[in-house]
Length: 246
Image (tube, helix red, strand yellow):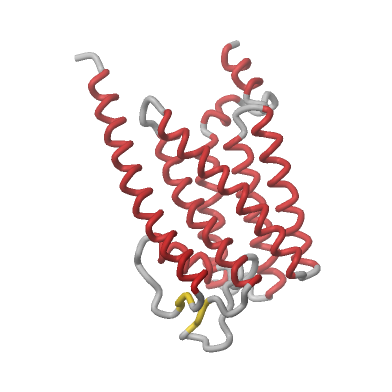
């Protein structure tokens, strides 16, 4: 009875309560699928055709956004807000597969950025209010980090759409593009995670003051996230250990 009431309060009464309890595990699986599948399929030659690559990214991004909506919807208000942001983003991403329009892609990027930003805030808030470490907590921490990388990758793609020439590509002079949503999706993802982990990119560099500022902010945010998260999880683990009966 208690589980049923909690599921109803979450706004997902029609979803199995056990699945909702492990919603961050589902989210992590969707994000990993988005990050891993495109390069694997491209390496095997399964999505060599550009439209097929865009369709694949639209499907994977759509699944990820739906997982985000599911993960952050703890009550009806949050659920409604997430749906209002996520569903139009998925629709626009799908429409862009059929009809390529810069404005359509930019609108989809903006909606994705807002939804992912809200999701990261909710995940971090969950981590700082959790009373114990379990599989769901660890998955939430990893998901927040990966969503940050995805968020910045889409942000760099949006900057590339609105301000072409914001990035220089030494490996492909004049031919590189910072676009997310098709066969070139690996480029913004690569640049984003290389920046956030301070690995750095030898073949891509910010060429404008805006791109340089965003790159610097992401690098600092990535390091701060890891430092603060580790401190939080260690403190939580110590507290959890001390509470155990001798």
